[in-house]
Amino acid sequence: MKRDRLRTSHSKSSTRWLKEHFADDYVHRARESGYRSRAVYKLIEIHEKTRLLLPGATVVDLGASPGSWSQFAARSVGNKGTVVAMDLLPMKPLPRVKFVQGDLRETVVFEMLLNILAGRPVDLVISDIAPNFSGIRDSDGQHSICLAELALDFAQQCLPHGGDFLVKVFHSENFSLFLKKLRGVFSNVSSLKPRASRARSSEQYLLARNYQG
Image (cartoon, rainbow, N blue to C red):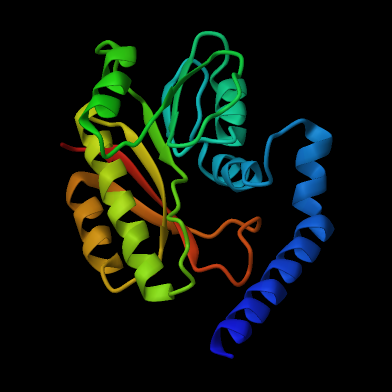
């Protein structure tokens, strides 16, 4: 009986998500504009507020698949810029985007990214990595902080003095500790909740600017 209740609950949740997805204005806008997912509008809004992506910049996009953030980043930095993307999942090729498939927790993937950069200073690391959600908010939040820590570790290895870092996190009991760590190595850290983020989601984006490490 309990299993049936869980199955019914999961079915209702899936049905609700599908209805929201197909009624979502951002989904339609992304499709019409040729972007691979609605998530691009989160980055677009952040960029419009902060001028984050500059022509000629070198950008690393962690958790990139299906690639909408990389699409926008490549368009923003232009032909003189560089975008390197990474994800555990495959991603269809994009113009002017170099892609590495693998798990950032594996040393070999970490090194592949650094090799592609070939010592080139990175202006910006962006991370939209999210955990595989279990439905247990505290557990999912903790997992997201672990992934954010991983992204920060990579950023600290490739960002020069003055570089920037944008990362998605979900609220958890370790959020304040992660925020403190960011403030210890960047001169300015702000929290952003783009309009394209779903209202019921606890996700937020931390923008850390002017790396001091």
